[in-house]
Amino acid sequence: MLRSQAQTRRRAIRSTTTNACGLYPAVGAAGMDPRGVIIGREAYSGRAYIFDPFILYDPSARVRLPSGHVLVLGKSGHGKSALEKTYVLRQLRFRDRAFCVLDAQGEDGTGEWDGIARELGITPVRLVYGGAGDGVRINPLDPRIPQEHQFKVLLSMVEILAGPPTAQTKFALAEAHRVALSTARTSPRGAVLSDVLDALTAPSAAWLGQQLVEPAELADWGRPAALALDELCNADRDLAGLFDGPTTEGIDLAARLIVFDLTRLPREGEAMPLLMAVIGPWIRFGWIRPDDTVKRTLIVEEAWHILSHRPVARLFEELVRYGRRLGLSFWAILHHLADLVLDEAPEAAAILKLTATRVVYHLDREEAETTASYLGLTDWAREALPDGANICAPGRAIWQVGSRINLVEHIRTAAEIRLTDTNRRMTETSTPSPDDEAVAAPVIRLRKRGTP
Image (cartoon, rainbow, N blue to C red):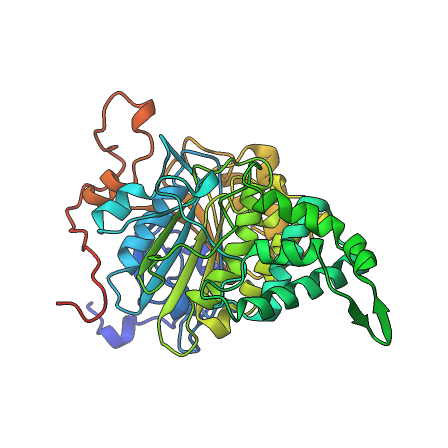
């Protein structure tokens, strides 16, 4: 006997999402907001994985993030660089997006971003010793940086070169900075580091409350700072040419993509942390404009140069902490958390905690355990990270976005594969990997605002 549909209908089963995943294994991970750029696909559901930290910060987003900052970790050769570059290329299709990249990796004297810059019609900003050739100079006393932040930069530079300054050295440096700015008001070039050095080595008497500090005593107080600045201002020193003069003209801070090529600076020594100490405030006050609606992203390759030096981390922590007010997304790119001694650098730990998105590629077992514990990853993610041949093979990463954790497979177009390939030197052919999607998509050259 046939029964009607009403007679065969069964009562619905109510269940939690967690239990439903066990009852129905084919159910994939929950998606996030459909707005943004496609990163690739969620490995288990096959669904498109879409991400945009600015959209996810909006109260209307399906998954609300407390900040737009991103931490990217993983061993070399598993897709960190490809992710950053394709993300930038895809985001640049939106008119209200701008990017600044501190490119510290490369070969033959050019950074990894050089190919993308050429494709988009951009000239990277290169910093080299001595300011020779196509190198540029950045002035820590650039008038675009407010006076109080200039002094913070000076203190950080002295600390990097000579250790933490004493109270007397800080007082002498503050007086020298004030005198340098006062003298520079009559100069068309503005204040430069050599002006501060001159004021430190030939000071005038200064008042400390009701006490008059004589020039000889003030010069003695400022000697550690003077010796540090001499390393930057003396033409015979290794660090000459980077900071001892006015900022090089022609750096377009209004460009939608700015690439600072740092590959000609040594990774070891003081040059890189010094540059980071200067460039952070310089970008904040020269590049970021609080009065517009542009959403900006600062990507820092080899971010351990920031996080492992307390005076630099101190400056960047302030930049990252005010990221929401500035419309800034900060991306820190690292190989391992073990590169950092977080117990000795509370500012670095604070920066990492301010990241609401963590992307982790393949790691060795011991490093995976440390990273998973620090980031609070689930057990399945902890087990997946050491599996570099299958689950976390090149191009696949664990994405922790807020409270949601997914395994994401990055997909690149044919043009993106060509622009992001960093393995040409190690491979016999430049043929794209079969794991990558050879989808045709154009790369749009950038134009200044208002040009046809």
